Image (cartoon, rainbow, N blue to C red; front, side, top):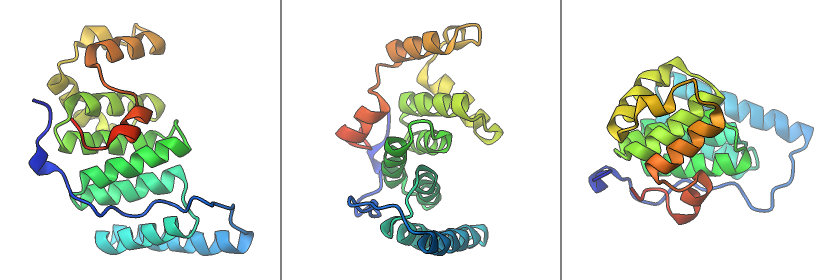
Length: 186
């Protein structure tokens, strides 16, 4: 069985950006940049809860981008909230489907939940978009746990062939479908 329900975090989850989004003015952008810098500073100091508050403030007040959503997801994951992290990553990917950080963080969250096939899918896509050495060992582990044959995913296949093979082998829904049906189902 893929996943362990005891590893899931429970709502409430942090808020999403407002639906009636209007691009911020230049003055507002400067304020948002300061809030983002403060969140990063708090995280560097090991104050993840306070960093989460700042990222949530930034998102609620119109400063949401795919990278900001992925950064908040990374904080949520550090706080042991993988389902909330997956939710934020899905929102980030709806904003920008090529956000490698969102795939990496969502893959790490699925890894934490022991959703091996979903972790494999997301980490593979994240590494294709933006290779990160820090995720290479996790990717190797979930590749093994998901039972993916390395022969079928070798570099000699082009990207399209690998995606088709992975989809057939793994039988998992697309990232958009995952966002629609629920973030923590195995």
